[in-house]
Image (cartoon, helix red, strand yellow):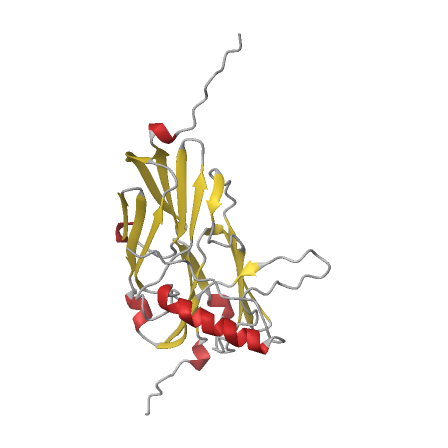
Length: 127
Length: 153
């Protein structure tokens, strides 16, 4: 899997005529397992409903929209950025896009990207 | 107890002012000794982003802590300081296989924040949802805004 992100940190996404939206790049870990790849991305403030995972033209895009929350009072100190999350990864052709599964638990998105059956190592019996 | 600021990557560029940039780097290096960023070797841990809100009767502290377990978060209040500590443990699923990208922080973290007003230690509520820890601290009676009616005769 070529895990090079095509959207560098802090760069606004390019919209066609639409107003520019700024996203935060979520921190991610990617590992290869015998069956495929596991991708984890940190998106605090995102629930299941705000998640969009798309595969198109060999690119995997993850988009996380924060649960809209009213601020509990006057903000007196801020470190969080409050933007939605977006990141795009190039994916290896060996990944079976139809079998990608996703779940989000306490703000961590976990994607399982299984390899297609045809690329898995196979033992051939000799008669 | 040390207070470590959340580290935000610097976006300012001084390419046309090379000498100033060098000076700035020197100054930054000096400050690195006193204020280690969250990926420096002096502080072995990570530091989550923290927001503080002031409401009429309470203070609300929100901390971005994705991927923890409720039982691994520790909250304590001492002398008007709210301390948060915990640990993000590596799950077994992540240990096998070849790593391609490793950006997430694991291990222990600690944050502490001095609260701007006195709070009632008996009335602290915490919840953890979608990777965000919310701590609600009711203000102490003497810190609550009081409405005093003035009668004009």
